[in-house]
Length: 93
Image (spheres, rainbow, N blue to C red):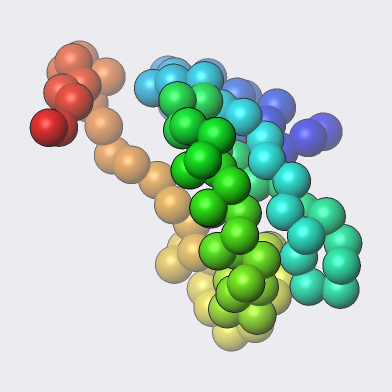
């Protein structure tokens, strides 16, 4: 099962939905293997190009999986926003 599908299932399970369409962007990671990351669909093409360039220029700094972070507790590496589904989101200016 792909990461995008797992994300959809997690959001469904938590009763949440993505704030915007999510796109997969391919980045070449360590060892020259392609990795997929998620980017907001509203991110302009120029922003995606800059993000990919930054990630590829700094490939040795970023962990692409939990396996690349030995000794780091999975609870620390897990990212979750605690949002109240009863409250409407507010876009910051």
